[in-house]
Length: 269
Image (cartoon, rainbow, N blue to C red; front, side, top):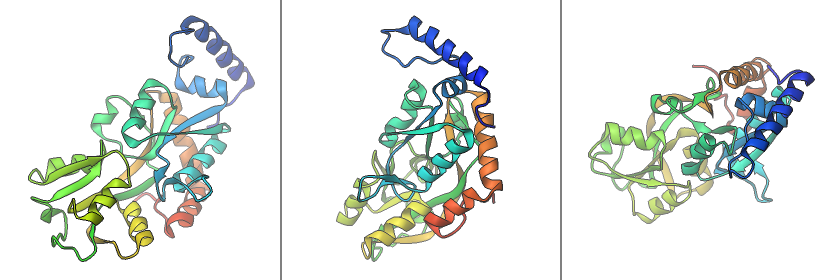
């Protein structure tokens, strides 16, 4: 469901121009009506992501933004017939950027939760995963699964569903929150924390890249999908879902997944 007619694009640009006159000097981005209209008028999709979350989105040795979600966002924009523009932020600022209109969507392993649905809309999931526990090599605290996290100091990203799961399900654990995806593993290696909760696919990549420093314990749990977060906008939500369905049907999602993970993490369970 691409952003279609030239007449509709012209209408969006005209409205955007009038809106800009009204809010000039207000210090906030001018939006013409719906976010869908704004994207159509600018012919751009502004995508918020961390850029420090391999293998989903990160910068390679040359500084180029790469990863599963970067390839997915590029394919999504091509399906919508718009240009992707990436804006990077720490996880703790991503949904705030979406709410304030600095980005059009967030593509960063965002889980669709009842709390977030009060503020945002979500696409259908484009990948499926679960929470994984990672510990220091040798497992000095004998952590074997979520039931053994009681009394342990456990790290999770600030505002993530991993940290929320911990507080809700293991109230005697000692949570530590971080707004980046590097420091918790430095603290884990130094013995300042006992475990980290993260996406199973991120953990697998970290363990592989760091050699003998960390190990995975137990099986993934609390399975869920990752969706595109967007402002409340039914028209944009429908367009994104249509594009995801098309990318799934033509095999693009599977190809991108196998490139980064060696398996298809995009298939509906």
